[in-house]
Length: 466
Image (cartoon, rainbow, N blue to C red; front, side):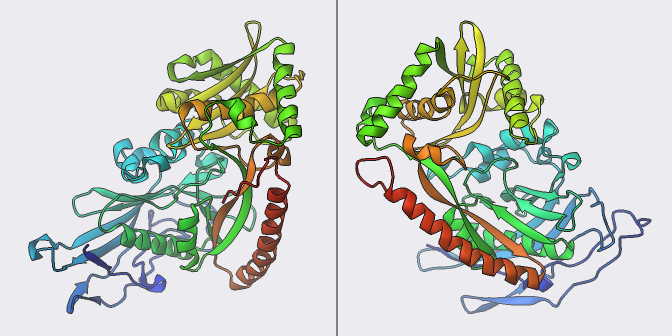
C-alpha cells in the first residue's frame, strides 16, 4: 500500500490573510499571518509546500459574525512510491479548504459521498445526510435566527472534487460563553462520525488538515471554544491526540442477538421483567388502541401535521423549546422516504400518539415522541417508543435500537447503557484546566454508574455493551 505524507503547518501558522467582507465595517481588519514556505521530506526528496492563505472575519469587538464565504487555504498532499507502485501513479494533490454558509451550497451527491463507507455500509447514518441537514436549514430550524449559523467546512482537490466535509455551526445565544463553534447534527444526540471524509488514499491526511483548520478557525475568529459532539469512539480518540478534551456520557441502546421475533427476545429476560413487559403490552389492546408502523409513501401530510402537534405538546409539557418546525417534518419526510419509520397509535380512526424513528445501516434511531394533549394512555409511551422499535429492528434485521439519552426506566425494558463521547477545544487555558479536572472526576463517576446498571440489568445473563 502506498504511504501518504501531508504537508501540514502548525496551528499558529496554518492560516494566512484576512480580507474584510466589507472595507467599511469598523470591526474588520487585515491580518497578515503568512509564514515561510515549508518542506516535507518524502522518500528522501524535499517537496516544497506553498504558503497558506485564508480568510477570517471579525475581532473581539464583533458581536454579529459576517455571513460570507471563507477560503481557508491550500494544502499539498503527496503519495510516496512503494515497490509495487509505478512512479507515474504518484501525483501531488492540492487540497483547498473553504467554509460555506449553507449546506445548499454543496450538491447532495458530493456531500453524501463523504458520509458513505462502501466497505462498511452498516455504518450508514441518516442524520449526516444532505437530506436531513438541509431539511433543518430550509425549514428555519438550524439557521442564524435560532442561534445556529451554518459554517460547513469543505475540502476539495484541484479538480473541485469534494474529499471531506464537516457539519459545522456557529452558535450564538448572547451569553459570554458564546459564540462558539459546534460540529454536530443539530438537536440530535446521535453518535456518528463528524469529520466526514471520502474514501481516498488521502483520507487520513484530509482528516488531519480539517481538524487543524477547525482549531485555527476557532482561534482566528476569537471564539470561546470548539465542540465536536457525539463523534464515534475512534474519531474521539484521534481528536484527543490532537489536544481536545474528552467527555463521556451515557445512552440506552437495545442489541439484537439474532432474535427471530419479540417473544424470543423476551426469553432472554429475567422472569419478572418478561412478565412486566407482557402486562404492559396487553394494556394497549385493552384500551382499544391499534399500533401501526408507517414508512415512506405510507406517511401522509396529515400524519406529519398531527405528529407536529404531538411534538409541540411534549415540548410544552416538559418546559422545553420546540426547535423543530412543522415544515421540517414535511421536508424531512419527503426527502428521506423509506428511511423514515413513524409509529402511530390509533383509537378508532383518530391518531392519538406517535414516535419518530430513522433507519440507518444497522441501527434504528428512535428520536421523538408525542401524544394528544390532556390525555393519558397507560404504557403507550413504552409500546410506541421501545417495544415497537424492537419489533421493527427484528423484522428489518437491524443490530441496534438507539433510544437516546435519559430514562433509567429503559433498562428494565431491555435497553442497556452504552458510552457516548464528545470532544472540546477551549481557547482560555484557565477555563480549559478547570474543565479538564472536572472531566476526570466526572468520567470515573459515569463509568461507575454504568457498571452498576449493567450488573443489575434485566437479562438472565450479563450482556455487555460498549
